[in-house]
Length: 249
Image (cartoon, rainbow, N blue to C red; front, side, top):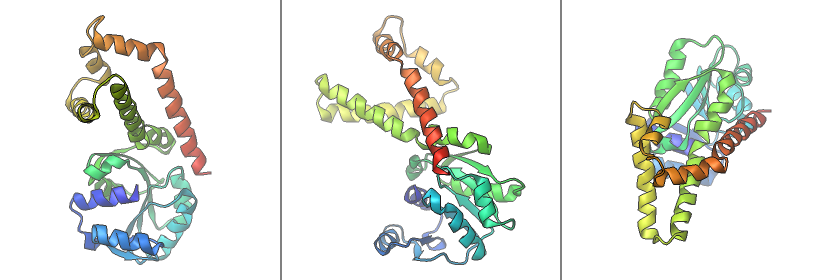
């Protein structure tokens, strides 16, 4: 996720030379420098603002170290770690924002949820929104909504890619050659996503518009409904949200 965000920020116009990437692994550090043209370091350097993309168990310690190096604004994309935990680690003189982007940030089409610690100045939240907004949509939510938002949008690309994979497998099984089926599936997701994003209709209405009574789409959707597709989705989101909460404990 850190690399996806980094690439999106640079694609969005942030100069690589204005970024210092801290990475302890020398091979990864060299690869990041070569790939993105950013400055790198194996230790945290003095800074005013920082985005941290580390394992959840390391997030609090990194916040504390950034504060010691003069950071006044920190955005964390560590899954599961509450903004209160991060703020406690950083101290009262630092504005801490928790966020969860997703991998479409790679192409400037990310969806990021963020929440701020209590008492954070609006200008600091605006800085976080502008930083993450370079790679797509940003919505501000409350802390108690973050687990579900992560389960839906943060993990959501994985669900869609699984569906695309299953749809392609089914097409191949039914006799379509891969060179035909794969571009059809890719364009299906691209076009349907663009239609949903640009339409004034919601997903349910768009579904109804493409579904003729007793037609082909109706027959396929009926199988989804009969086999409990909606219940599966509910279970997926519920379990992913639970796991996000567990990761911060």
